[in-house]
Length: 96
Image 1 (spheres, helix red, strand yellow):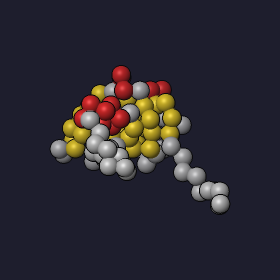
Image 2 (cartoon, rainbow, N blue to C red):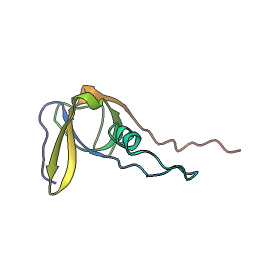
Image 3 (cartoon, rainbow, N blue to C red):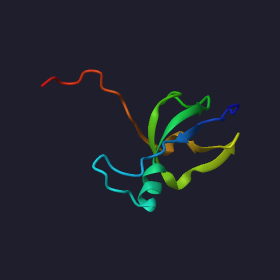
C-alpha cells in the first residue's frame, strides 16, 4: 500500500471479528459491526504522531473516522487524538 498520512493522521486496518464466541454462541451482525469498528492495526502514521507506531493494535473513537478503499482493501484514516488506547503484549505472564 502506498499512502502517506500527513500531520497527525493515522491509517488503520480494522480487525475482523469472529462470527461466534469460543462457547459457540452466534454473534448478531449488529454487535459484530460495532465491535469491529473500535479496534484496528496501525498501517501508516503521519510525521506528527509520536504515541504509536506502525503495527500497534489500537482502540479508537468511531465517530470521527474516514473510510477509504485502496486495492480493494478497506482502511480508515483518523487523527491521533481519536485513538483511545493501544494493546500491549505482556511477556511477563504469571505462572500458576
